[in-house]
Image (tube, rainbow, N blue to C red; front, side, top):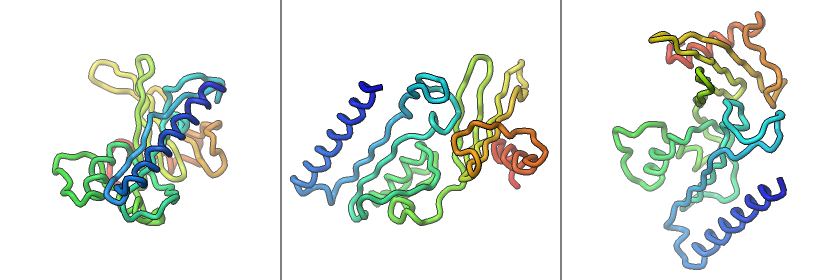
Length: 195
């Protein structure tokens, strides 16, 4: 744990040096810098080491953007996906967004962290003969674990977490009667079925 923290601290210092050098050279006002990473390792969290789940701890990643004209040291809590980086950078650079680009620009959230953002983010992770498909909203995370049998995909298990009362995803409330409506809505969105 000490070595891991030291590594993170070292990288943080190098990023500071890079940004300071851009200031020294007078080119920061004409440069977009994006820092993102993978999600890092669990270090005993939830009794697990490494990564590879659909939980918040494994799907959330560092994402920091420095761009000309932005107010520094602002934080935005909107949901975004890494696939959104291409259209976002195109928009911030004043370039057209390629018509084949996937994702949605979140440049409005970079410019104004209080602007409304996307309402969902998706992730997936394979585990053995199953894949967990997840939808994350501001208030919930819903996962369907699907087992492939021939051409059909059957749901082997479901997980639903509600962040207001359980912000660390310890209590799976899937299939509880009082949460059926939320679960049904999230399942439809996960499958791309309009409400």
